[in-house]
Amino acid sequence: MAVDADLKAWLRLSLIDGLGAQTLRRLLLDFSSPQGVLAASRSALGSRVTPELAATIAAGGACDARIEAVARWLEDPANRIVTLADADYPPALLQIHDPPPLLYLKGRSELLTRPGFAVVGSRNASAQGIANAEAFAGVLGEAGFVIVSGLALGIDAAAHRGGLASAASTIAVVGTGLDSVYPKRNHALAHEIASRGLLVSEFPLGTPPLAANFPRRNRLICGLSRGVLVVEAAPSSGSLITARLAAEQGREVFAIPGSIHSPLAKGCHALIKQGAKLVESAQDILEEMGITATQRTPSAAAGELQHPLLEHIGFEPVDVQALCTRSGLDAAAVNAALTGLEISGAIEALPGGRWQRIR
Image (tube, rainbow, N blue to C red):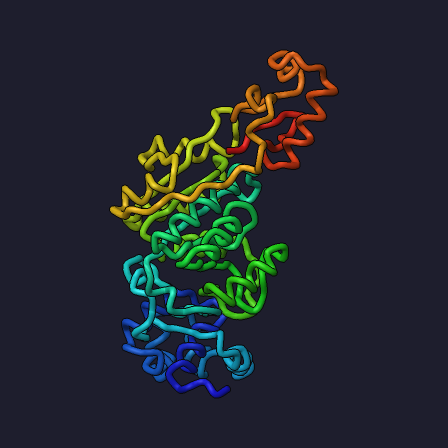
């Protein structure tokens, strides 16, 4: 597929190794357009970028082979590139201080024009956290919000599933090129999103999963969203970066509280202390956003709430010995009951031989 002259000029600049988005935007301001940058003299460029970059730009920018690789990728009708100069560049990203010059898209690009809501959290999520993320995303999606997340394991993946199950669908903002999937375990989910939702990246094709790219990805997740919900997060979680960026961008930040004993609740509790809105249901978010919708919650397995041992298992972690004391049952009976309840989805096993109830 031939790449038109305008897009080719954008690619010749954006694919230059070492030419960052901020520098490229500054060059565009100084020389009016990508074609203007490429036509500039080496001396004019030299006052704005390093001599090496000035030489590369003056020589015509990125090599033809990289342009041709993008052209082959664009042969798939599901694939698109939008630039800052395009009328359909997402208006929400124009509001952030460092919008990416180009966006690589795979899937339903029209989702970028619809109101988004981010749902993020821990990669090592609990079963309860995953259930919450999927349920909250489903309700928000039915209320009209496209669910935005980062395609990571755990909470992100659950949020995407909830969005896909809703009328509004989902957007996955990734930290790699769109010619690969990271993490590999989300390969099937990524393909489903490409089919029924949208994959977005500011990084060129072939970009590997570099650690520095994911904080940059996070600013786009909140940039595309009216608000951000953090479901579970440890104190060092990258989700807290997303929440901080959201607050800086003027977006609403919400957090689900958890057990004071759970490391995955500490990040959410910190956000609440800093001013994030505590939510116990998706309806809390919708009311805050001025929207009314019917809440959808995870369904319990048939008959699970009738088991007498559940009366002694709360949402705080508990071990077998404590359950024996509370219920009057011996260890063998308790262990047998725990196995059945775990299979039914009523409880989850935690490290250290402890158990916790799931709503």
